[in-house]
Length: 269
Image 1 (tube, rainbow, N blue to C red):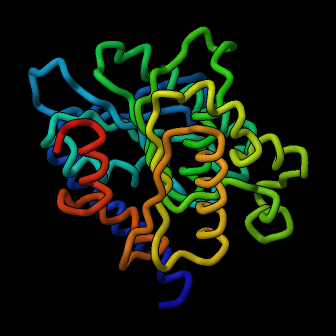
Image 2: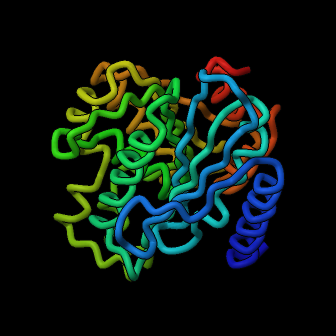
Image 3: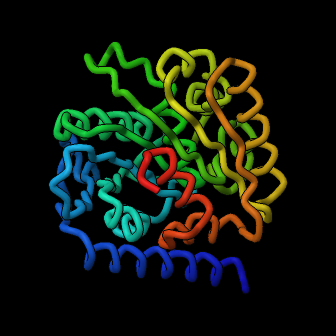
């Protein structure tokens, strides 16, 4: 398949999964978490009377310049059956949004979710590719300026990017227009000392696809190592028989290794 066809197939798979999720779960769509037009989220609610409800916030990938929350509900397919709430977050992709804005938006989305759903038993983050970068930036937030400290119990960072400096000279940066300063302050690998403070009781899973490109694998391995050295509770998952795209697409399947790991982390398997 050509690169364009791979992307089209990926978008189609995520869209189909999201449509399935919308048919299975009660949904609250386009809930604002800020003033901006793109600052909205979708909530997938299980039919349960239990008060022990974990909540997963999902940040989509797409190199910060394509995809949206409209294709981001797919992982709710197996999770709502187990009594898990799934929130898919929208943010302003480039060129409308820049890196500082996107990071600010995902942080504010988390604040909004915990204010609206204060009764949840545990908050978990999941992100793919650029979304894993944004989830890692949420983990390294200085929450004192938000007057709230989210108790994040777990984070699944799937095929992520943790050092933005190598991107500066590539086509990916053309719509982003990042300078070196912007890349440095938004690189989770440079912020590991801060992360320890906000996530001491948080289990982080850094997942990488067997057939991810060498740069993705290298960044995942180095970020995992930096977290471990810093004393963070982190594990590395090298997922066999997957590539950069189907590693996340397969979260529609309840028997998939990462789905099972996520459910186990939440005590729901």
